[in-house]
Image (tube, rainbow, N blue to C red):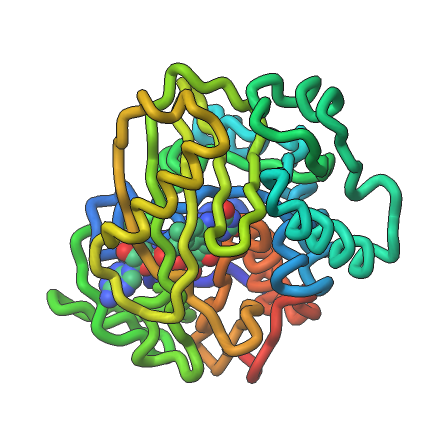
Length: 361
Ligand SMILES: Cc1cc2nc3c(=O)[nH]c(=O)nc-3n(C[C@H](O)[C@H](O)[C@H](O)COP(=O)(O)OP(=O)(O)OC[C@H]3O[C@@H](n4cnc5c(N)ncnc54)[C@H](O)[C@@H]3O)c2cc1C
């Protein structure tokens, strides 16, 4: 792989990670996005950023398990490298996550546990059953519950700190950044915006759902969530509530901020969060911990997860153009493997599962 002039369309999660890693590999990189560099238009900017291979495999299947753990190991190394390259710390943790259900919904917890046991062939270290005392010793404020599950390998990271650190590392690494550009087409070696057109030896299309018109089979899966400041709550790990009607998770951030999510609706509507979704999220949340009643709502957001029919990510390669898309609910969980797969493709090596490859460079 000789040094290339690479244009990246979209400075969301994948675009930023790719820009940083390609600069480190010695390429010349130009990143083009519609926003001001903060990342506010990216699905990844509002996301919970949980690294949850086991919980997610319960819904998506065992294809996520080994790759998810591999990606978490990469995050561990990359966040150290990013600290050196940017001077910014990105808070993250791999201290496990907790799954709970109210006594009347106990069947949901059992279903989760049985499904996970089937996927992991009952491996003992992947999921531990918690009685009330064990649950409270992990998370002392979950006193509304008398049982739970502990998934010790899961974690989460601070996505907004990550976005800032990547922006800094890209700038310090010599990346060019074209902001406020609405991209209308990404073709072989060319990115065209409403302002201008730029030629490269390779164009990478990382626009998430923004690439829908050009990426066959891509659909949006709408997700709504809330960012809260809850000084009366002290939860240290991601918590999932199993419930027959609502999906709820709580992802902690530094300084008593919690990300509460998320709906999952087969729609590519980017309309603001609905009253119904907000009511459902908040009433389920209040049932987990009464301390959330005094929380301030910092943001109520919606976006769309970019997904293909099998909900697994793909690289679609033609000479001069690679479309990098379909990370669905798993941009953080699988993002490092996606990026390593693009680097592997450029070097003529095989991409990493579960990333699908179509075409060739
Ligand atoms: C509610 C919600 C919760 C989530 N929680 C998690 C989680 O806990 N864990 C996890 O692993 N994943 C999670 N995800 C999924 C994750 O956010 C996505 O998989 C990830 O953001 C996909 O990354 P991307 O770079 O492909 O797209 P994005 O992050 O959406 O970035 C796309 C970029 O392209 C730019 N762009 C698009 N169109 C144009 C255009 N025409 N012109 C210029 N720029 C353009 C945008 O401005 C944006 O910066 C969640 C997603 C949602 C919606």
